[in-house]
Length: 313
Image 1 (cartoon, rainbow, N blue to C red):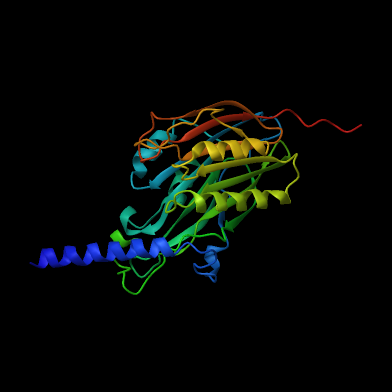
Image 2 (image 1 turned 90 degrees about the vertical axis):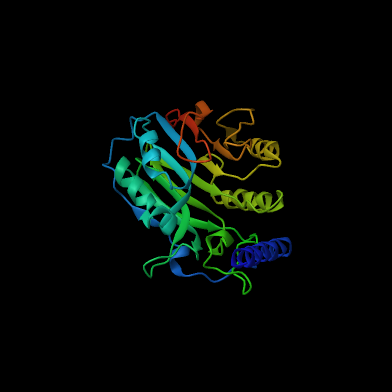
């Protein structure tokens, strides 16, 4: 009887949370005022500076690592695949499900890379030892980081918002404080600026919220000149209309790492993850690495190159 009663409570909470989702998609609804850690990325300069003037290529991975629950496997996959930039999504920090590990720090230490980390959500059901638990995006790189910032989208889903009738301590309910972000890092490559957007768009929407968040990224890009090298990569949650994202980026001068192909990047059957490039950078090669293990997503890989800047006479 107790089991049935508990199951009824959980089902009721799930039903109510679905109702909250249906009516909770208004912009600026979710937590307009957040603590300082939410707006300021953590930065660690760990990699030994290398002469970047002679470097001609950038090897980049974009991978949703499913919280880092299989951290040892992820490390084993990345160790023999030297990259220059890793865009990681769903990266845990002090969450119970990943043993209270600082996943971004551990990966940066293991790979000897610089790191920027931006908080997406505080996970209310994952806190332990009196410390908050977070999930966010990490950009790891052997290139020097000039600066980093968090672009927190104005358009958010109300699905994750804590509610009085939903127990926040139950992991199944996934109650969160915060909102979806793009982690923006400005890197040094061949003595010039490369702007990198590490993106994680909303999953609880049939496409409308994802597209509006996508538009906010495109609007933010206007602060940079059209000649600036820009990389936009991450988990777009583009499961419904992936070709629409591809077409929209191509119209704005971006190239996809996988060309015109819409590639499955999830173990089930969805095209969720992308790398797009704009500016003098060229895509030499790109593919979805379905030989990788450690997550329910497959990483997208690209090798980029750039011609030397023309000297003004």
